[in-house]
Image (tube, rainbow, N blue to C red; front, top):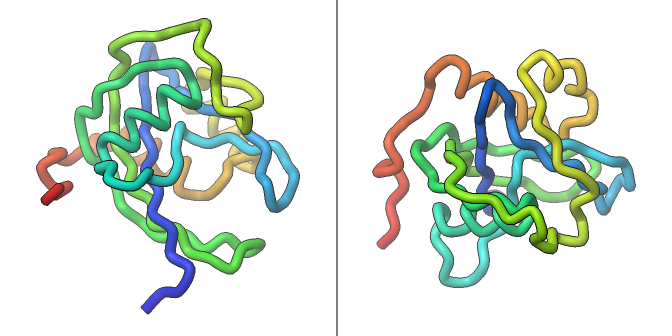
Length: 149
């Protein structure tokens, strides 16, 4: 049994050879980090619904998930918890440039793969780059792998 397990959902949004990332302040370390739009599920929310909501709240982009990239565990050294992260691939279906973003979001960035790799020391976790590498390798699976009962 893993104690202090937190479920999060994230979306890899790829458009015009660039990836959508958010720059946010890590509440524990205080440093600015880059992450895919991601967060915890709200009560009664599915993994897919959570990914859509988090992306909209953190970036102003409306997305439609198109695939399942990965599910993995990460235990940050500075936190006494483990994150179970479900990562989806999503395409943009709209954008509200006047949207009020989550207060934790400092900036939104569109980075190509080389730019992302050059800033790998700023990533919230190794799962961010892992998801991008899986996307680039075509490791995209059906959303039917995610059961909602």
